[in-house]
Image (cartoon, rainbow, N blue to C red; front, side, top):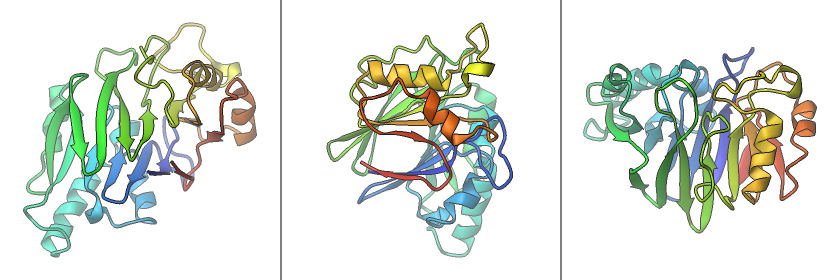
Length: 249
């Protein structure tokens, strides 16, 4: 598997930036994980949107889905131009709640929608995917994703607080994409459905992950500070997310 960071910033993109979005490629498929603000512009540097095989959305907060409507409209136009068959809509896998959000995921012949829960398992080409509800704090479901292909395991943690039951789901992952929303200086005293960079590193180390990608960062954070506060992870390489970063598993 190859992972390409298309966007990682939150709660909004900085100049020339993008909020969460990750392109996953194997020999057989191309999958987009989340579709935040600015993600489509970054995706176009790697492949046209009509070549995607599936899109998975962790939850419906704006920073993770802002470009979905643009994606749907773009796919409709590519079908009109004959670049993507009209009988090949892009399948979107996402939470079934809130219903008002889920209902927007079917758009003409461009996209279809399949709801996900913790009991859902999906196989897309050579990628097997399972889901875990995270501690994101506001009542609406948010799902982490475990992708397995060719003997490698990628876990995308989406948004998560300290109450998520990671053991077993993310243990010994070849790459754990984990949010580090806060640095030490701005970590709230009361948990609010997000982790700090230091907490992400400690979590990945406790799960014996083989590498860590810290993401969901405010665009103004200094990359060296992110790496410094991730020093608890010593089991393998640690990366601070940046647009265009590629990791091969």
